[in-house]
Image (cartoon, rainbow, N blue to C red; front, top):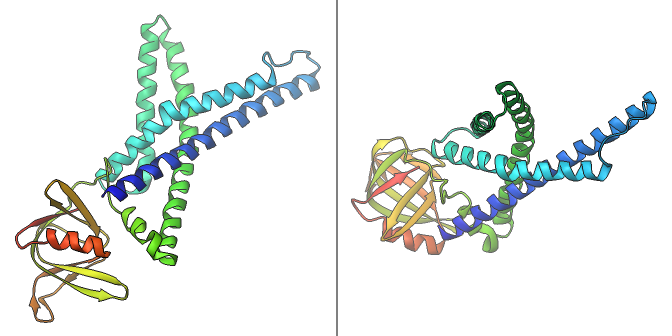
Length: 279
């Protein structure tokens, strides 16, 4: 769990930093292009009215606006959407409407505050709509950069786990474990009857047998146990529904691929009568 928490925290920082950098750079670029467009238009029309602010000031203002929007609005809204979607086991794309809902709420609160500060209602609504629309456009860019970076980080670790297992295998398994606030609610409960192991190549596999008390257990879900004050989690490679495996009678078997350290921890946790949370 400590490795999972550390890696997931590092991924969170890296992907949000990249997403914020993309939005900030894009906002600065748009500000620069807008300034040049206004300048060229004035020159072609021979109006003699150049942009009111210098080019560098316009670009720096765009960069500052993009950075502030990323840190104060986009980061908290997407982070909250990720927590809600993960805990509710919603599909990935649900994070976008959830984040958009948070941004809309921020816009409404801003309009209320402006109205209370002697700003007319029409002006407050116009400011809210303008800010919300621009933030929605930035949200798509931010979320796309966020998911692309996260996919790249996770894929790199997965490939590293296969190419260099002694170095990256534990990290590859750890990144699949829920940690921190990203802990989905329990989908099932599983009562342990017994456990045994077998070798699958170089990877030991722990088979935990028992009964599903409630809910549904599927491949790819996580089994969670508590040993004292320590929480452990492992990804279920497959679920076997049968009356027996060899000379061992059971109803359901959970196959957990583990390393040697994890195997010892799970053997201590898989005691008869203990109940696992399945998430």
